[in-house]
Image 1 (tube, rainbow, N blue to C red):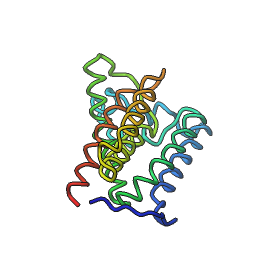
Image 2: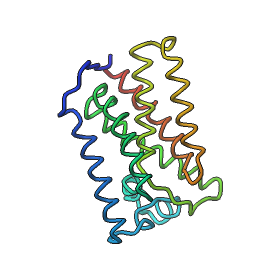
Image 3: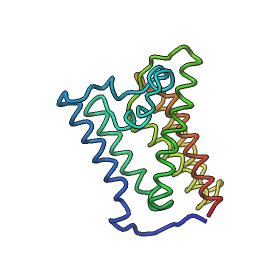
Image 4: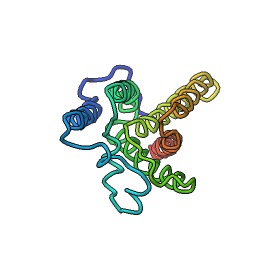
Length: 191
């Protein structure tokens, strides 16, 4: 059902390396003052009302600090490589960007419903949460639900802990995680 490779090949990590390089490049321009964070970040106001749809993508490559980008890129590498190995490059990209676009739109509408139209959101963590969802689906598919209970509990705990931290868009994390679960499960069914 899922492509499982016991040993990965270097060339299979190109998508992750490209995504990390784009994130680092955007961060470099932000720190150099060539680009302003508020011009790339997303909010309901900027994306939906002002129709600046590019912000769904630009915000996912934008980070506020060295710590922010470091931990996101570390998570992208470690979770992403497993997802890319299991689902392939195309599956990886579908899960990652599907989680970003659909999950972020859901999050924006939830923020709007809560009167938070101007809440700015940035970072790759939404896409990473989608990859975490895909990772969980792979574990359950390969090992079965009964043998995956500890991984299931730890994964859900991790996503929730990541989402309740101060100054974090937890709504985006949860929405992107849910989309990652759904998209990866659909990919498993289509194989």
